[in-house]
Image (tube, rainbow, N blue to C red; front, side, top):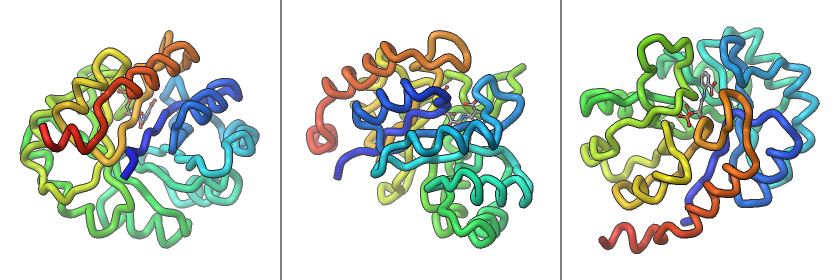
Length: 222
Ligand SMILES: O=C(O)c1ccccc1NCC(=O)[C@H](O)[C@H](O)COP(=O)(O)O
């Protein structure tokens, strides 16, 4: 099965087009006012038609209330929500029921014990994204450009499908994929020239690096 590739925090027609053309299966919009990648409802609704059919649009929120999530569902019509705050499995199930949308839950990993949370979300989440912990001083629960120790994922139930996230870039994605076999990968800061400024050349370099990575069957065998 081909790996999912999510390019997150996009905000321009050019970067949506390039990421999609190079093989992104998912593109992400951030709706979190503290983020340099924040897009208003109007901005997301305006960019929505630029996401090609077959590429999934994910809107990322952080502990958003029902009114906000309802407005996103109605006006932006994403294919999926990404809940990147402290949402419990019960809240995730409620969000799915209220919005009628699939939901991915982001979980932060700093130690093997952090992976215990995965079991609670697996029955309700449509996808699990494993990200690094927020560094001290950052106001952002994601999009910090820092990685966690990928070797911790050896402790995961091998049946767990997850998206690997946190600090990936063209220079380390092949190394990550030599160590772990995620169902998907997600990148934001690693394809930016400055916080919130996506760079087409870095997007190209990321996909070039993936083109050079060994296919998943070879990775599993090694
Ligand atoms: O990117 C943000 O600004 C952001 C803000 C608040 C919550 C989540 C956010 N990003 C979510 C993502 O899915 C990022 O792609 C993920 O955290 C990886 O980011 P990076 O380490 O910068 O590649």
